[in-house]
Every structure is written in structure tokens, then in C-alpha cells.
Length: 183
Image (cartoon, rainbow, N blue to C red; front, side, top):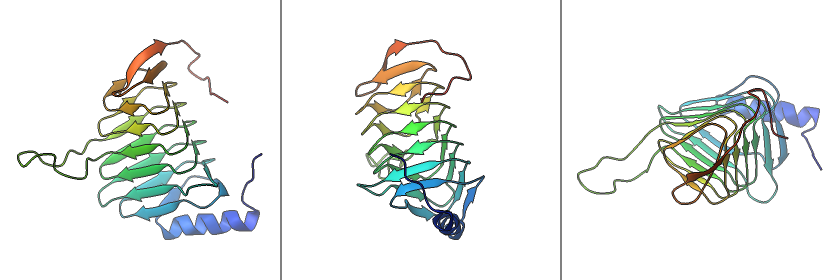
């Protein structure tokens, strides 16, 4: 059952996004709680993005100098946590399941001689990211790919692949038309 914001609520949500300095290309929909947005950088959201948060609120933080782009018609489910310190690009028609984490930084030093690791994340179009997957700095996920539930991604996943495990590895490849969009 899909519930969308009323006309007044959509107006309020768009106003909330403008207050948070989020650039929106068109209307967005929210089912349940509005996402928590902290934007100190650049946050661009495409048209038709849907947030669904009935159980756990989605949290989005764009830190200073960070650039977050969410493409048209993306779906973001309960409890998704996105922290952008450099750059995260999410392609159009991507579906992100419950409690997925996307961090483009390690936040802390691992050892004294190594600085905090920060690297952009690129998620292609029409990607499906399964529940509780973790997408780490340097992840590059190709168009139409599927990331299995619980997978940890750091590195390249080719287009039209299914990746699973810790660390995520390709377990299957498939073919599809370039303009195919999953339902």
C-alpha cells in the first residue's frame, strides 16, 4: 500500500528541503517519517524520489565540501543512513532497501601513520541494494547490478552483476536491455 504526502505536506516537505539547502529537480514523496537531513555541502535530488520510513527514520548527512546526488525515481527505504564527506552519486531508478549504510569516509584514523580514508562512491542507474548492505569509500557499482542483503562493498562491481558477501564479490552476471528498469 503506497501512501504519499498530501498536496500541503508535499509543499511543506519541499520547503523543509529548501530550508536544508537541498536542490530538488521535481516533486518527491514520503511515506511515513520525513528523513533527517543535515546539509553543510551540496545535496541535489532528482524528481520522483520516494522515501519510505515507517519504522526507522532515514538519516542523511552531507558534510562540508561533500556532494550528494540522488537521481530521478530513486526509492529509499526505512533506516537508510547516508554520510557524504566527499562525493556520493546514486543513479536514477535505484532502489535502496532497509537499513543500508553508505559512507564515503572511514571517519577515524586506523593507525597513526595513515590519514582518514575518504573516497567517492558511485552507484549506477537501476541498481538494487539489499537490506543491511554496507557501501564503503571507493565503491563503484555498475548499472543494473544487485547488491545482496548484508553485503559489504568496497571497490568495483561491474554492470549487470549480482554481488554478495563480505567483502562483496560477483556471484552471477546477467544481460538486460540498457533501458530496462526494475519494478
